[in-house]
Amino acid sequence: MIHEILPVGPLQCNCSIFGDEQTREAIVVDPGDEIAEICSILAQHRLHVKAIVITHAHIDHIGGAAKLKAITGAPVYMNENDQPLYDHLDRQAAWLGMESPERTKIDVAAREGDKLTIGKTGFEILHTPGHSQGSISLWIPAESKVIAGDTLFRDSIGRTDLPGGDFHQILRSIADKLLALPDEAVVVPGHGPITTIARERAMNPFLQDM
Ligand SMILES: [Zn+2]
Image 1 (cartoon, helix red, strand yellow):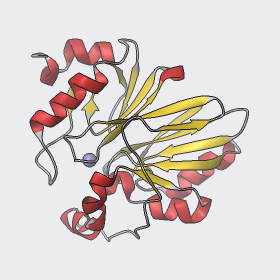
Image 2 (cartoon, helix red, strand yellow):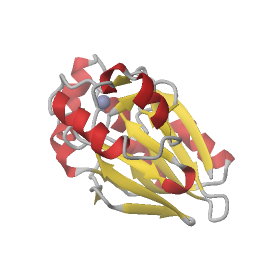
Image 3 (tube, rainbow, N blue to C red):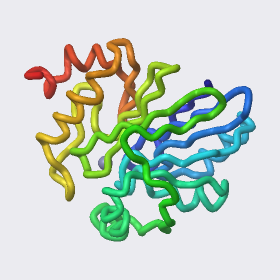
Image 4 (cartoon, protein in one colour):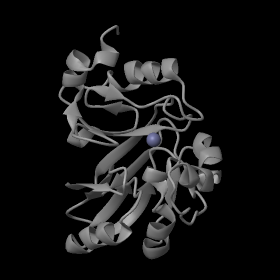
């Protein structure tokens, strides 16, 4: 499995590009910005995008989705609970003093238990609300890897003071969905360095009472 992690935009959101070596199918997760760079990585590996998956509708994760969809024709997957956030993308842009990017229609609702595949590799949707109501994580059992969006970071968790945030809910999502994954599972957070489930269970100050 090809997996490139590219921090994009002023908030350095980790965009993940997964590619299957046999079928050359790709899944792009959180194309927040720098779509030209993402496209050049796709071209380097001769990949065609099968799905664009959004972990949550904050502008740094979803800002480039419309542009990438226009270029690749791939459908956009997002949990429907984040539609209100996406509808107010212009408000999010204003908070950050940015120009509002173009929006697009969400093609597929990403719900708990849904599965995407490229080649023979499955990607399972975990609904992990708390940072936002529609926050999802993507679990890839064959790679023992989870894309955690802004739910879990190395030594921290997602902020819950923005609209749709809920501190107790994010802790419950982490306890029930993420800490249930194998210890050796690699966690790719929405920002910052990768980590593992075992490391966060042992070291993350927010998870010590679990
Ligand atoms: Zn966020």
